[in-house]
Image (cartoon, rainbow, N blue to C red):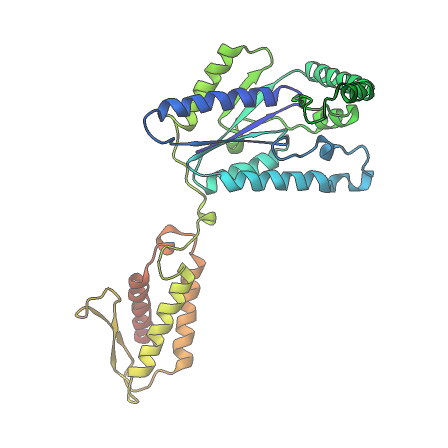
Length: 348
């Protein structure tokens, strides 16, 4: 199942919408699997679930000459990427809640989902810069108030016999430092529905109510799990060429051609002109391939190895082509024997 990438300004309501989407999808999965085991698994991945602090995005304390190589942010993205890759499959719906503000990062996630043959989409949380800044400033104010009253509360709890573990945990996400918030907004790259990695693009704005959110979620469900879901094919360059149970394509190509060269050297006579019988590998003893050696001379190992390398070079160069990559042992033997016969005929 697909990867849903949530993106938007910092403190624009992404986590709230991601939790709403998680609840909606959980309900839809229960409805579609009421009498059977769940068909899909649901995952919500965010900075909070991975215990990534918001300070990793802060470049204010970083020297100007190393800001482009912000190691802490790259390490955070690596942790997120690993968490997504571990659970992403055709049976898993993954909601990735975070800034996701770099289009190159969204493209990397798009390629990962395509490689496992599952669709991806982007949910953009629309919010004005002024409103998002107001939310962040309010969080900063509340954090300062908690810090100011923290010592007094701790003393009161100790006096009343309330331990720290018994104090209710604060569920609200922390704020961004003002300079860090401005920096992230400045660097934000809005998704473009005209690009492959940002489409299909769904949008929810700050003012959308629960009914409007449900309509967007319904459209999203139809796209990723309903009748509107499209078949995803990975790029040919990323498809692993392991079509044969005996090994991957290059290994089978090397093994079969080497075996034919060995049979020719073992069976030919000194006079030449022999017909070397090669089993076709299909288990039928009556069906064999014939290598017609040139008359009047013996074919040496250097000539056979030269022809073998030329044949392998032709087929290795086209490994990205479907017709070449799907060749099995029998087809390799047939084409190599035909290649040898053509070469010997030209030399004769």
